[in-house]
Length: 146
Image 1 (cartoon, rainbow, N blue to C red):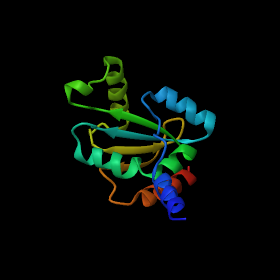
Image 2 (cartoon, one colour):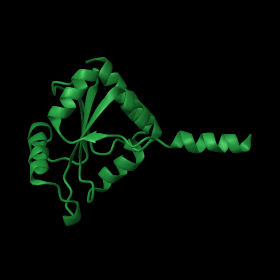
Image 3 (spheres, rainbow, N blue to C red):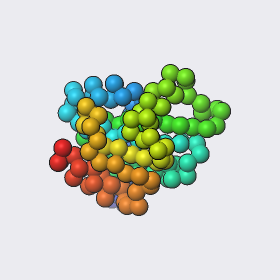
Image 4 (cartoon, rainbow, N blue to C red):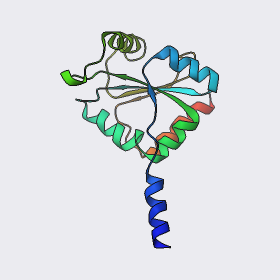
């Protein structure tokens, strides 16, 4: 019985890695097709401490993962600084276009919940000082009033 409980505990903490898209048109098409909201996250994945923390504590949590797989299309605009993490020129242009439209002040992390048309429903500036469950509840509440 203890072995079974241990297995369940380990299994419940593990989530399938989430698919983060990097192209708005693809995210919009998927959101339209599946009737989901888009969650856009602006990140400095290799230099921004709060971005790294948000990835580990919120986005990699089982609570967020379970909710996101069923309810969201995830879109990431990453702005890494390390040479080894540099993006293609085409991806940099896509990320800059997203930043010009949704994050013109260059805030990191910055997360935007929007509908499939790109209309903003809710925004989070910086690391949300809440648990993954509360963050998911905020997304769910904002999604329901779209």
